[in-house]
Amino acid sequence: MKESHTQGIEGNSLEKAFGLVLRRLRQGRGLSQEALGFESGYHRTYISLLERGRKSPSLQTLFNLSRALKIDPAELIRQVADQTHERPQRIDHAGE
Image (cartoon, rainbow, N blue to C red; front, side, top):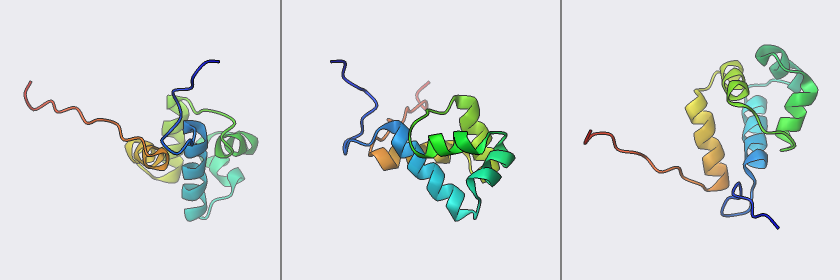
């Protein structure tokens, strides 16, 4: 059986973590799935699939959703990383 590399420390898949963060941000801004879909250019059912962890967003989708939610894409990714307890390593370019 193939091992998944998208599992966090507590077993949240990246898709599920993204969905939880997306739902929290959407609800925090008082948007329905339909309203977020309209603002970002996606159908309500696709937003639902993302929130339930059934679909993985493309990079373009991540940026479109971030714009609609008025959040920096890097902040969205950071919140997903926090949700999965996966911390990306920072690369120090100061020595270059």
